Image (cartoon, rainbow, N blue to C red):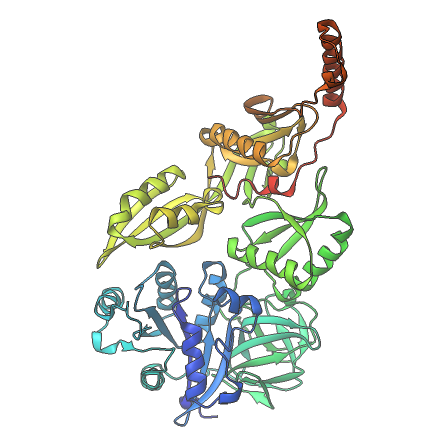
Length: 592
């Protein structure tokens, strides 16, 4: 294939700005997919993607148009998958930046533009949804010019829904996006930008060939993980698999391997030939570490084995998913799972419940903490109950996030107030036309629970939010334990800053009082830091009228029965067990 006739590009945008719909129109216009096979969001194959209207797994597509080969990668828009997006951007030479004509530039749009500029890509700005009555093309055009420093004539105005001007986008790709560079050597270097597990064929890799060529049945090696395997089949996606004899420099395609899990061929790794390996790997590979952790427990302990098997199957396709066994005296056996963010957690939970028919209790999400002990040892703890004795701790470091919020100017005051309430620090405010961009830093733990909901409430839904992990800061952190009827419940323990501990203790005990049912004896709900109780609520006992069987008005007989009941309640209080409902373990998610 003539390398000068190849154009590799991806589509980047904020969630719900129409990139998957634009991809549909391109597949239609280029005749890649026949009309009878066409359906909306064709590249979003998962039921969950269609329902939520978001792209979770990126998908490549191979198209032919006016004598050129166009390779498209439809990328996810959410911050949780930014590493996969950065690898896809490395696999291409150009990016189509889609901006909604009704909403303008959003936080994730900015984040993806920065990633594209880092990779030195040619950016083609596109304004979508110009057919809507609420569209404001002049304002959005001014925002794009301000952001990219381009000429207004370079911006293409389209309606992906109706197909208006989509042909101009395809022409712009051919004219503006550079062809792949010619290889310096014949050593095979292919970048893995995505992988998934097929139940019948094993691990399938999506790759971009930077140097050399990859024939079918070649022995291959993953340079970062050191795994060796065979390329059982190679080919391109249009968008179904189309086998070829070989993939050559500049092409984007797939490799069917014999591997049993995606951990052996991770995103960002370099594929080379086992017999003639490349001297150096392609740059940019990193081991993705989760930073949000939550306990997943089956409602019935009989389902623990099913939960473990289900997670093993999901982790075959998702190399970022990490889990370890966890045992709680109240909830029984479960798994502590690490995620890339809250959306990632939400998707895994829904897939476990839908695809594997599991009933789950999910504990409050937390982040990891670095604990330095007095003897110099460092621990990485993922749950508050793992914190060692206070006398052994020299310092605790918590992760901080760097965040960006884009909002209409009138909401700046409310947002700054919200950031301060989360112990955040506002770093900078800049203006994009009628809106403001607020840069801030805040503890990751405070952004995990209900920050996004509070932001949407404070700005009537107009603000958008993007974040990335910053560094770890040493803070005055404490573990808050929650006691139900004098018994400490490990699954409810949380880490918090000392200044916020009292407020969290009071809020959570009040919430627990609402969700834990009344018993035949009085139940004390307490929040404690070590041995110090910081808040208490009491669930009153059911009162049974034991005097109803007395038909006389004798006060002594009534007092005798009441005293007997009192002694019974005291005995129950000592030996009685409180059944804690699953709602109690998610009270931190919605504190308000």
